[in-house]
Image (cartoon, rainbow, N blue to C red; front, side, top):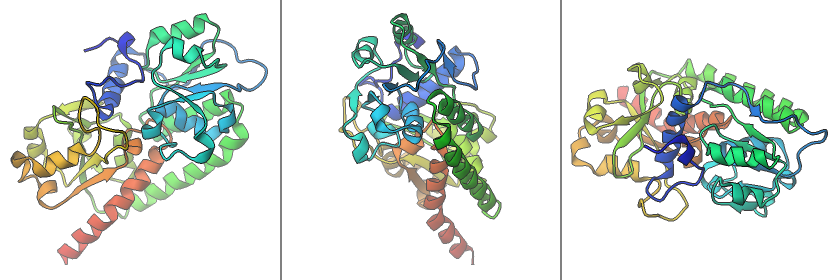
Length: 325
């Protein structure tokens, strides 16, 4: 297992991003103190930051929601798959990109504010701070309440409170609607699953995927079993748990790398592996998928993830209701 100092935003060729990000989140929970607020290194200047670098997909989600692209110096290349700018909106297409959270790459972009996730390379953060760059450490986010608090804190940091207020009101309204509709939904036991040809993994309690499930009134079978964070999962575990629904990630746009396919492999594996043929979700075609950027979200976009999953479940629930008549 690599140390925290070895982790950067750039995914190594030997590790798929959908394995890498949950792995980092789990590692951060072990190595870093619990934090519910953003943590800057120095007092903010008198004016708003004008060369902001969101150094992770999570940070990009927040920045995209709060400020114009003209105030953004660069975004990480991986955000084109794992953030709200995945579809490259025109206004953001001209923003510079960088490949990894490394001091040399970031300093060359002359930022006046850098936003980082808690598991990103601490030696890079230290180096940036040595050069006088204001670095804000985002909190670890697992719930809607944590995401909401982080959004509000970053709005103050970016001096974007006027933009944040209506956004938060709209998000609160959407969350309320999700929870109201959840009361009318029949109970379903769901398992979140990733497998890229090696060991499988799943999301337990204290993860954004668990929060998405709970927002919809779904039971996360791993959280129900008392497991927290992202954990390994064998075929035997899958068969024993036998969930009503399995949630996976859709294929990515990025080309396959040394690790092979970087999205969609989990669903293909579930339907092609002979050992899983008797799994109820496989036998009855109950595997549903979220876009990679929502499956791996660590921001307020978990609300969008819940709404997307709700839409994915609608035809399945209609099929189940028709079958019960």
